[in-house]
Image 1: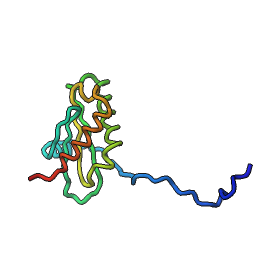
Image 2: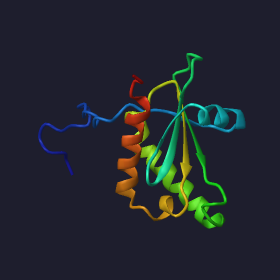
Image 3: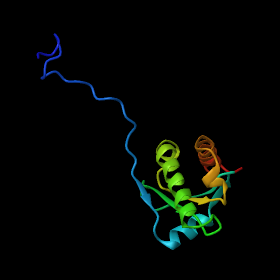
Image 4: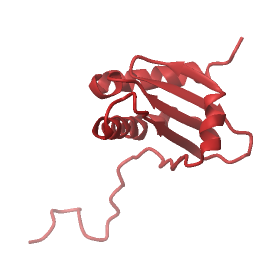
Length: 135
């Protein structure tokens, strides 16, 4: 079967427009979590966001997740972290700032039971709040 007129194999097809890929690195060292905990923070009904601007010149966005035993058993803690990771994949590439560390701390019951759309709105508002200039 031949392709329709004007659509031969050698014609360039424009690629769909995509947002630039942002590589998110996961925090692994306790010292990084402690530095983020002592920086700016903003609480939402679904989680607590801690944000720290690094002064090392590295443009990478780094992210950490915390779900303590207050959240519940291992199943609930893992579910809370999965939901937080999904939020970050959706929101942080567009609203996060290069050279920043972010830590999301799950809240008991709320992170697991709150609607995903509400969590997305929480993260967007928290990011705007922590990046707002201080008076």
